[in-house]
Length: 198
Image (cartoon, rainbow, N blue to C red; front, top):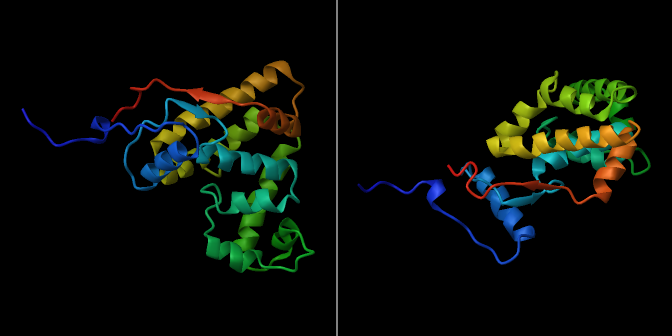
């Protein structure tokens, strides 16, 4: 019997799994096309992991303007690029976090409150607990990431949690230490080629 083709019927092959493969997967996610992803995915590459790491980097270094800007425009906070330009515009010598904390704009003030909550927790919570709070706490991060990036974002999110657990098993708990350990590694999420085929 004949039937219409489904996303699981299509396989895209590339010579090298570098930027092109990641770009294809990201574009398919953005277009709402179900995709299993690549069979071996560097853990630091998926957008969901980058967004969560931006939150961790900000928590470890609040004056890191780039990490904060990335966090603001991620699904975790949900600002648009236009919001960032409107509420983040400041003198070059002023740090973005300092600017947000002093802003009287309602959107910026609400966001600063959310970020303060993250910073308070980062002072005493281990990385796993902090990620758990970001993902299922008041930020509802997992839901937001999956809404924006597709259900395929769940695998890399879970692997990041596994990486945090592996780090905690062998190291003194430290947010900055985890970030350095993660950046120094070459984490890979191994996937079966047929997994999530449709």
